[in-house]
Figure 1 (cartoon, rainbow, N blue to C red):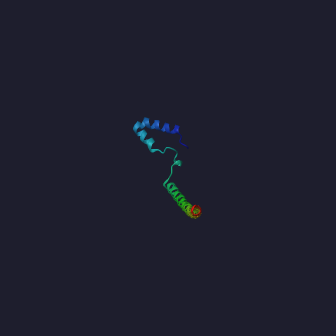
Figure 2: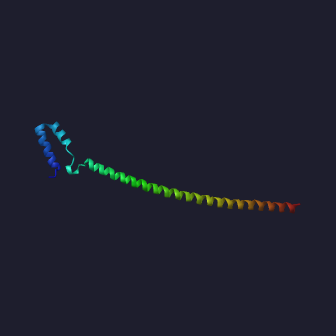
Figure 3: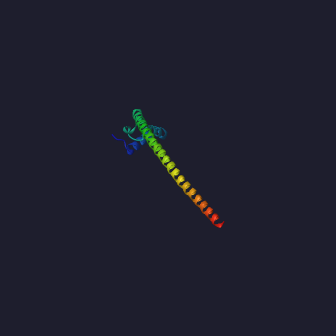
Length: 115
C-alpha cells in the first residue's frame, strides 16, 4: 500500500488526538518523507560511491590524455612559431642589410660625383 499525503495527514491527526501535538510532530518527523521503497540503504550508497569512483578514474584518464595531446600540440605550435620567427627575422635582416648597403653605395656614388 502506497502512503500518500492524505494518509500521512490522517496519521498525524490521529496521533495528535491520542498523544498530543508534540509527540505527533516527533512521530511524523521520524517517518521518511516518502515511501520506504524510496529510501536508500547503506549498500545503495556504497554502490553509488563505487560508481562515482569509477567515473572519477575514467575522467582522470581522459584528462591525462587531453593534457598529453594539448601539451604535444602546444610544443608543435611553439616550434612552428620559432621557425616562422627565425624566417621573418632573417628576411628582415636581409632587407635591412640590403637597404643600408644600397644607401651607402648611393652615398659613395654621390660623393664621388661631387668631387
